[in-house]
Image (cartoon, rainbow, N blue to C red; front, side, top):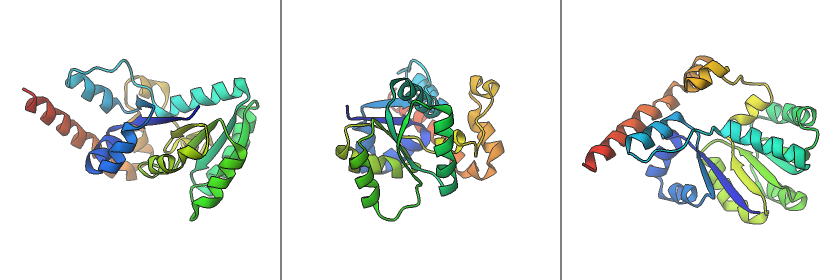
Length: 210
């Protein structure tokens, strides 16, 4: 079952508008979930409402839970070396039913070792935490080598391994996860500028349609 899952947020949408190849990759995905609240708000403004927001992290947790119950094999690719190392023990502790097909950090220079490992281990799920757009380009290039569920998960390994904290439920319910992350990581302010740019784009499209 070869499937490609994309968790779309305003940054990914803006990147896709600037890069036709990247846009084609996103459009080739089997499933695109609305990861960012901006996607939900934008769709509503354009009168193309989406049912709900489904975060990339929650999607990943659902896959992990399913894999744990069904004793599936997962290959983990990405994050810093220390995160990848901690992740291995965390997975074994939290999801004992998962068979870890392999864990490799994102600091590799040659794809060939990764590709061969994936081919030989034949995982059911491959989680790629290389950040956008690198993770989507990687998946698009190699998804043919394994009949797996492929998903780009951004910085999710950091949270899963305990190196970053996810926003408390209150912040999540009020769609303020982005603000919580900004307080934790002030350097994200530059990336956060994607949201107002995205909303300006949405309103521009709305008024052009009138």
